[in-house]
Length: 311
Ligand code: CO
Ligand code: CO
Ligand code: CO
Image 1 (cartoon, rainbow, N blue to C red):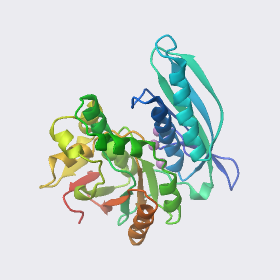
Image 2 (tube, rainbow, N blue to C red):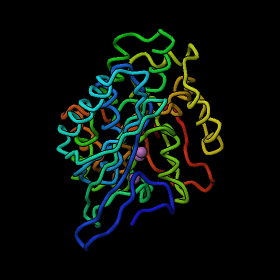
Image 3 (cartoon, rainbow, N blue to C red):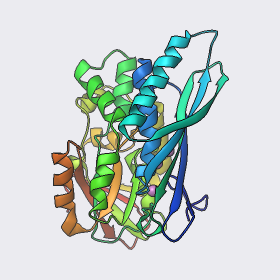
Image 4 (cartoon, rainbow, N blue to C red):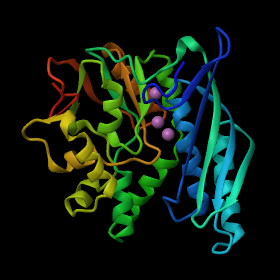
């Protein structure tokens, strides 16, 4: 049902009229110093692609590359414990895995889940008038860059880690009740890159209210100091033709929308009459969701409009 034909979060394969498999895999090199936290973040990040399809993850398998000559095996134990604890929280069974000796540490999981074929959320399907909701604050790439430069405050680092290791499960569960038209999650290509994947070939445009973007503490200050990851600049170069920027949009917001996210939030297009109720329900459950814009019909090929206020 979903394969390589166009970008989406996971592969989906129909088994019966009532059941489809959802499969994804994700692994990376450490994005935090603490091994246990790294394990948690890697698993939350991989599971997110199943939630983004409207699926329910069931099983997972570890993928490990470990430099056993450089690091103590207890480091690997802590990573796996963090991953396992996160899987337990998500009620996903760890059923296997594979490890190799590798000069550079890597960890992640492959995940298998299920979805009803009629209740699958793909990246496509947003309609003019839809509101677009983002369920986690932006800025993990910027905070991480500030951390490496020893400029990040403890508050910003804690907030960034907490958001990266948070499951997108609650957000997806609540979204389900409002029948989203399209959904993806925001990761390495940043908000703009993943929004472009939702809009491509649709003839529609997302008008983002930059003032409404949820963001981590102090990201404005860090980006003003030039503390931005290389990926942010690469995303900007790659997507700049697809956006139009209105007057009055703050420079920090122009940086933030390109910031590559690790384990970012869901980006959900939902009918306008449902958006506020959905966001309120998410906020009550501790999900920092916000309405960030609206899908509009435009005659030109621009996919994203950045405005100071929505409409
Ligand atoms: Co994804
Ligand atoms: Co992914
Ligand atoms: Co998707």
